[in-house]
Amino acid sequence: MILGPVADGFLRYVFKVMPAKEICKKQLKITLDPEHAKCPICLNVWHDVVTAAPCLHNFCNGCFSEWLKRSQERRASVICPQCRSVVQFVGRNHFLHGIEEDILQSDSSLRRSDEELVLLDSCSTIKSPLVVSRGKNMSHKRARAQSAEGSGRDLSCPQCDREYGGFQCNERTVHLQCQACSGMMPSRSNAPVPQHCLGCDRAFCGAYWHAMGAAGSDVYPVCNQETLKPIAAHSLTRLPFLAHEKNRHEQDITDKCIRQMGRPLQDVISEWIRKMSNREVDRTRLLLNHSETITSQTYVCRDCYDKLVSFLLYWFRITLPKHCLPQEAQQREDCWYGYACRTQHHNEEHARKRNHVCRPSRGARTP
Ligand SMILES: [Zn+2]
Ligand SMILES: [Zn+2]
Ligand SMILES: [Zn+2]
Ligand SMILES: [Zn+2]
Ligand SMILES: [Zn+2]
Ligand SMILES: [Zn+2]
Image (cartoon, rainbow, N blue to C red; front, side, top):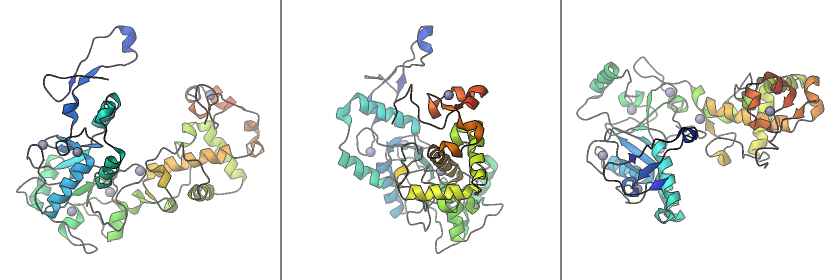
């Protein structure tokens, strides 16, 4: 990425017409001025950038979180620190996050010290999009009626209308939107149970409303408990679709192995979750956020549980002696490209003839 002054605008993209050969590489030159990538609160290049809506100004997650906290303590509307308009939503901006990293890579003098970043991260509370205000001068009922007509989305939650578990929302309560049912719940720093999946940082309301003893209605969508619960409380009766890089032949082999052992699938999974909790499993390939801190008591969503199980089934297969495999799978040689092989996805015969539950030994560095 090339950095240089831009005449106007926040980002100006310079799309160059490239010769056909280069278009294949999908390369794009972007010129931008780091001055336009600075947080108006701390005046540094954004760190974990968040965007406020509707004005679309950008801040460090930690800086804006502190601003939000102070506004709530004063019981005042959340005003954008840059343009003074009322903030209604705020969320992480993944696209700008990429730009933030490119800028710091291009000019390391703009980088802050590790100590500063640790401090900033410790203040960051915006994990998934927050609904900050319902817009000004709007009563709960009117806001609900309007949003129901307008977007079909309801901006109130059960606790906006009545108290559950000793808590009730007020006009300034910041809300999270559940990623499963689209319902709202108050964002609480002292919630008795997690409101986010640790594996993907998305918000889910199942555990929260269950703990509050609140049920849904036609006015408030509310998930059942299944959408967010401790790893140990999840269960599966079939292999996840994602297992073994979605290679159905390998899934069948794993299925047969488990049946030959006469064990229920969940029994095998639970055994491997225990091994993982005891730190007997290398977590390098576990593609979940915070993967190093995950234990059997960590709250995760269904998708993340499936990812975790797929990861554990890889280890189940890798450590299984060859003679435990079904007859037809015992003689197969390992594919050089292992789990990373692309041919396994479009060539049935190759998928059947070679073992793909193994590390790549060619075309990739072997760990
Ligand atoms: Zn900042
Ligand atoms: Zn603004
Ligand atoms: Zn509420
Ligand atoms: Zn998740
Ligand atoms: Zn929900
Ligand atoms: Zn292969």
